[in-house]
Length: 249
Image 1: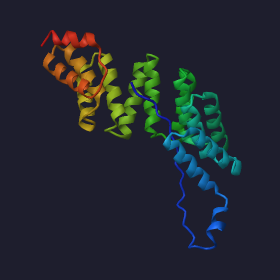
Image 2 (image 1 turned 135 degrees about the vertical axis):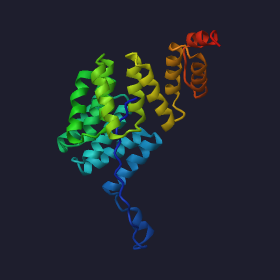
Image 3 (image 1 turned 45 degrees about the horizontal axis):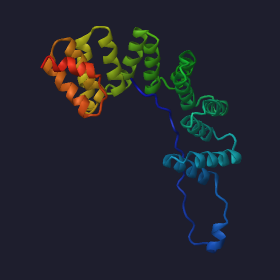
Image 4 (image 1 turned 180 degrees about the vertical axis):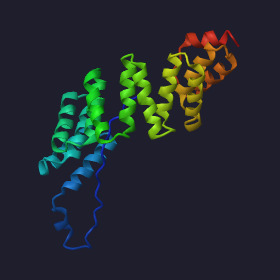
């Protein structure tokens, strides 16, 4: 299934360098600006130096405690460290500053989803959609939650909405195909998974699911072709399935 991805906002200012005014010694003692610290924090996070990134974001917030994007990005870093209480706290601070900050609500939804607290995640995604009805990841993630709770029709509704926003959205195509397969709608599932492969030919899970569907339909040649593709693309497969299909070749 899908990995739910947090939003990480970028706010970089292009700095124009002054033309050699003053001595080099004078330039060295100039204090860093808020934008400088934000840039250093973002670059440190990109390098994986989370301790430095936290330090720099805190300097940003010392200079401007109401910098909502800095709170958001700091929350993402705490999430990467597994410090979920601090993560959630930073997103809440961002929302307190900017009540229409869709990405902060989205990240709260992701955080609660990762904690398995699905019912708490839902209203945050719904809030995202109130602000931005076409937020495709929020639509997809609500579909994932309803699927995990066994509510297939609700899941289908959200997956279909993702494709209304973006007809070639791979997650929506794949997830819709997955639900159709569970409902026994094999032809519709196959059509969607083949569409996934048109958009993203190296989608290992699409190949694997097609292998499973074709096997159920006793289309063993097609099943073997897609299974081989999935394995070549690094998909971890059930060895029992491999053996069952091998016996049919």
